[in-house]
Image (cartoon, rainbow, N blue to C red; front, side):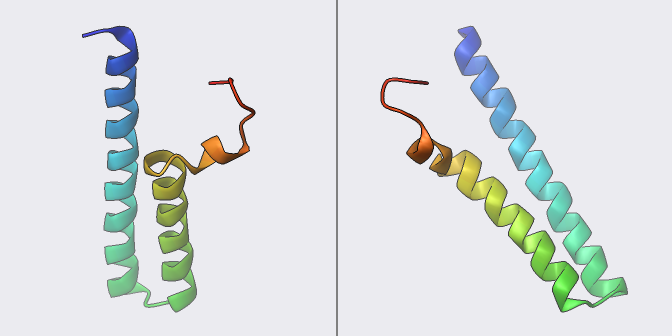
Length: 67
């Protein structure tokens, strides 16, 4: 496996772990501290992570030819 592919797998696993941790935090917040605002903010953080990493939205603002 080449280095680029291994780095991509590591980054994907890190983002997936981050999302899993945030989901766990959301669960406990919903049980112990049912605040819509806190849950909305946690959901927003998760949405930003998904859009930026998995949907590659950051590529829209890069110049042509740059990586």
